[in-house]
Length: 209
Image (spheres, helix red, strand yellow):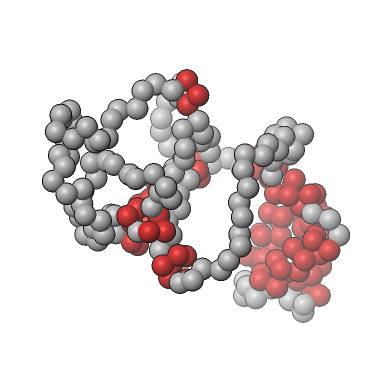
């Protein structure tokens, strides 16, 4: 949840959806996304889950589609012709850059990849870290519930009702009542009313807690 008061919306373009895919497999199943695929000027936070996904997503695409998944039409640059030193490997769909040299520096191909000059608009912000590395017990805190609490309060009326119903419809099938109680306690940490409504819904379904 990103409060607009803290993060005002800024229009950067228009995304137009005007048709369904002609071939679902080619245009949807083979599409490869990753939070690490960003244009210059954007950066990522130190969120642990996000940091893990920066690596995990491209690694998954390589396993799922092969090392040359970016050569698939759905993953190619829409207008610009890509020129880099990535060559060979299973599933090479292009001409593999022909006889062009794949090393740097070189003077045989003037259109080969060039080192990007420093761009002040895409300045890298380095994070200063201090402390010892090691294994430490995870300490649960209320900070972990700020975002789900904000989301629950953002929903209104029927939206909250639908959320509670969907949660109840899932956890009421758990066989161990203790597991259900623990999960209800998690929702209660986010918002006591949220947890109470889920508990009432589970009991109303005939489940004994």
